[in-house]
Amino acid sequence: MIKSDYLIIGSGIAGLSFALKACRNGNVALITKRKLFDSATGKAQGGVACVTDKSDSFERHIQDTIVAGAGLCNKKIVEMAVKEGPDRILELIKMGVKFSKKSYSDSEFELGLEGGHSKRRILHAGDSTGNEIERALIENISKCPNIIVYEEHTAIDLILDDKGVCRGAYVFKNEKSDVEIFEAKATVLASGGAGKAYLYTSNPDIATGDGIAMAYRAGADIANMELVQFHPTCLFNPEAKSFLISEAVRGEGGILRLKNGEAFMEKYHPLKELAPRDIVARAIDSELKASGDSFVYLDITSKDRNYLVKRFPNIYATCLKYGIDISKDMIPVVPAAHYFCGGVRVDENGKTTIKNLYAIGEASCTGLHGANRLASNSLLEGLVYAHRACEDSVMPINKKYAGINPKQMKNSQSISGESTVFVQDWNEIRRLNWNYLGISRSDERLLKAEKRIDLLEEEIDQYFWSLPFTVDIIEVRNIAVISKMIIRCARLRKESRGLHFNTDYPFTLPEAKDTIIRKNR
Image (cartoon, rainbow, N blue to C red; front, side):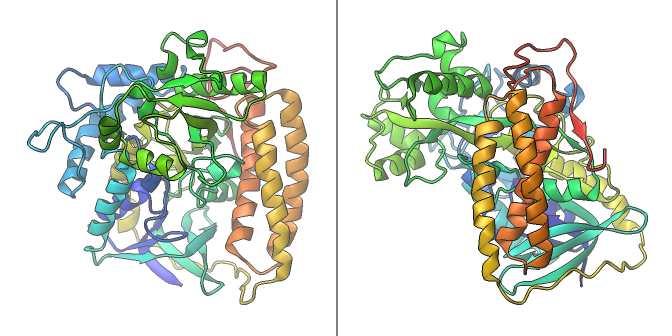
C-alpha cells in the first residue's frame, strides 16, 4: 500500500497544476497511465482564452461563453472562471510558459481569434500551446520533492470506506502486471475526457474516460454526458492519426469548401466559419451526408507561406509531411470527437458528491461550458479549478483518518491470450458510438445502442473479473460505461440543445436543465 496526502490521477494541465500547488500542503502521489507528458493538454494547439487586452473585457468573455453554451451555462461559474483567469495565466508565465508575442522586442502577446469569440483573446504558443504548457509544468514538477510521479500506472477503481468517503484507488502497474493500493486523504480525478470511445477522434489514445467511469461506478453524480463536442476539422488522412487542424486556422481566414470548391457555411450561420463548433460540425456532417463524400476542404491558401509557417508551424510541417502544402493546397478535414462538456458533477471548488473526491479538467462537469464549450476555455477551466480544488482540500488533508481495509483485488501476473477478445469489443463500441451517438441522434438509434451496450457491458464485466488485468481490459470496460452514460443522458434530454441534436426533438425547450445521473438512480 502506498500512502500519501494527495492522490492525483492524470497528468494534463489540471493534474499537474494541482500537484504543484498541493505539494505545499502535503505529499503527493501522481499517477499517469503512460508517460508524464502523455495527455490531451499536450496536443492542444489553440491556446488559453483569457482577457488580457485593454480593448477586451470580462463582460465580453462572459457573454461569449454563455452564448456558446446555448443557455445551459452556470453564469456564476462562468463569471468566476473568466475573472480568475488572468491570475492563473500570470502563474503560468512565472513558471516559464512562453506565450507568443507580437514581435521579439514587444511585450504584448499575440492574441488569436477563434470561433464564438467577439475579440482576440487566445493566448497561444504558436500552434503548440499545450505542448509548451506541459513542458513548463513538468519542469517545475521535477523540482518538487513532495511529488512522486508513478508513470505507467492505470487507475482501476476508487476505494470508499464504510462511511462512503473516498480513500484512494486500486491501481494497475502496467509494466509489472499487478495491482497496488494507493491510499490518500484527498483523491483528485484529472484524467481527461473520453474521445477514444468514438471511431474518429482528435484525442490521444489515453482518453478513455477512466476517471468519469470510476466515479460513476463509485456512485458519484454524473452530468450532461450527452454533450460531446465534435471538432469540425480533423485532418482526413489514414496515416495522420488524430491530427487536429486548429480552430485558429478558421479564425485567421480559413474557408470550408466542398470538393467542387464551393463555400457552404453561409447557408448555416451568419458568422460562417466562425460559428460555434457544434454548428460548424453539424454543417459539415450534413454536407457529407448529402454528397456521400468522406471529407470537405479547409482552405487557408489566401495567406502566404511565411505567415503560415510562423503562425501554424506544427500544422504546416505536419500537413507537408503528408504531401499537403497548406499555402497552396486545401486541407481535407472531417469532424471528430473532441471534448466532453459533461463529466463528474462538481461544485465551484471541484468537489464531487463523494466526500474527499475532487474532479477537475475535462473529467468534470462544472457548469462553465454549458451545452457547448467556447473554444480555448478548457485550459482556462483546468487552471482555475486546480487552484480552487487545492485551496478547498486543505481541510481533508489536515484531518486524521482511520486506516482502511480495502477488499483484495485480484492480482495479474500473466497475460492471457483470451484478452484479445477485447479488441473486438473495443472496435464494436467505438463504431457503435460513432453511428448511433454521434453528431446527429434519434430515439431509435439511442434504443439500439442501449440494447447492444447492455449486452457488451455484461460480457466485458464477465471477462474483466475472470481474466488477468491488462490496460486494454481496463480501458474497454471504461468506454462501455462511458457509452452507457451518454445514452442515459441523451434519453433524458427531450430537446436539441448545443452539442446534442436529436432528430425526434429538433426544438429547444424554454428552460435549460442539466441531465444528472447516478449508477443506481
